[in-house]
Image 1 (cartoon, rainbow, N blue to C red):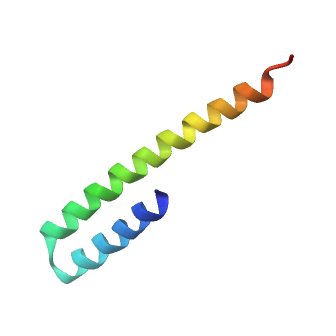
Image 2 (cartoon, one colour):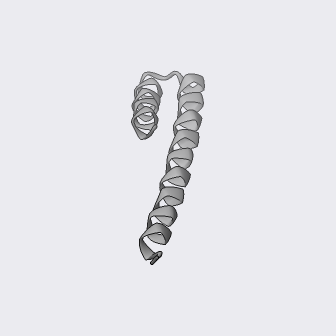
Length: 57
């Protein structure tokens, strides 16, 4: 998912450089959303890993 966020970021930068502001804004928004989802998933797995590591049977 982070890979797709980086791809959309690069597309946004290229289209912004070429003057396609509408496409650039849309792809930048998609990149932000994908990055936020990837960050949330990472934090969930980090909390799960820390709590699973601290359990003692």
